Image (cartoon, rainbow, N blue to C red; front, side, top):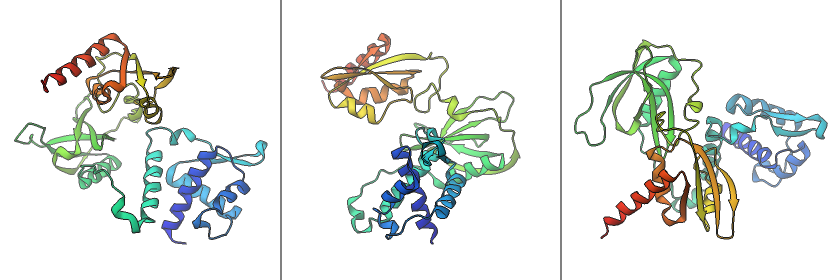
Length: 303
């Protein structure tokens, strides 16, 4: 079987088990036979077990069998499919690619968003992370006509946010601070032969646990933010939460209240402002005052 067809089967299997939480192999096959991929043939147990091993190797997703519950299969580490993890991103991307590859007849009716990023630089940066070597970067900030002198930096991790890839780097010095560079503003990036020691205890996801976007400012304290969403906006917030800590704490006929716990840095104001009158900040008061001020400043432009 071609590799691409196997990928489609792996993706289908993970998505199906994740969707239904627990399924026997017979139940999996009942859904499988409804797909065009099956060609009317069931998944043999030996094939299913090989798929489980391949899914673990490729995506780090563990499919376990609960023998006490009728030999039903489930995702043992389902949390990796519910976070901003590489496993979730890979499976989502491959799922979309699978759908698009089968839609050649309607390509002109499928519109995508462009992510401005230099794929070559991203590839080099990740290669440097794997090799444990520094990168040499020349960078130009917005508003600057000239590039900074080339910098030797330690590549720590990358993050995709708002259609942009960002690199998080350190200067090669003791107790160096992490800072952020956008890939689309790199004039060039080269991989060096200079080794550096990555801190094995460093947790990139944990580093952003209390933050929104790509700004992590420890001078801004972690606070409880309560947002009231009016009308259909509540549905959008349920489907696409602002932050992983978001939870719904109240509901009325015309609005719902949501609670988040994070550092409300200035970049968090942007999505709040974009909702206009569809939301209202209830807490903290200083953030409500700041959003109000920014709305009034914007309104003055149109006077």
